[in-house]
Image (cartoon, rainbow, N blue to C red; front, side):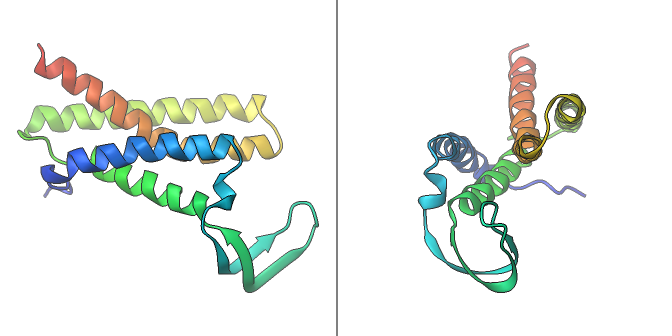
Length: 152
């Protein structure tokens, strides 16, 4: 039983994945990500950092830029990572599994190191970026190992 997506999604999802990472990172670093698609949304829990006002189950005004780019990065990254190769055999499956294992080891190793070196709200940023780092590392390691496999 294979849980892989069709090969026809690989190129499109790869372009969307890498572009959304670049554009999302640019918008985040320039503080423009909160200015995208500002609408009233229903919030289960909201906490105003500066006003110390806690609200729940109500409507708030929020920029949906970070939510949109999070969704784009995760969905396109998963589709790109788990799309079949043109020739999908046991060796490719093993390379895929080893790449996923290595990306998880690296990501959780960085979390362990960050636990002792990064504090306060910055630690939360490390955890959020790690969500994307696992997918990004898996894609890069898999592409590199498949490149080495096809060229050997």
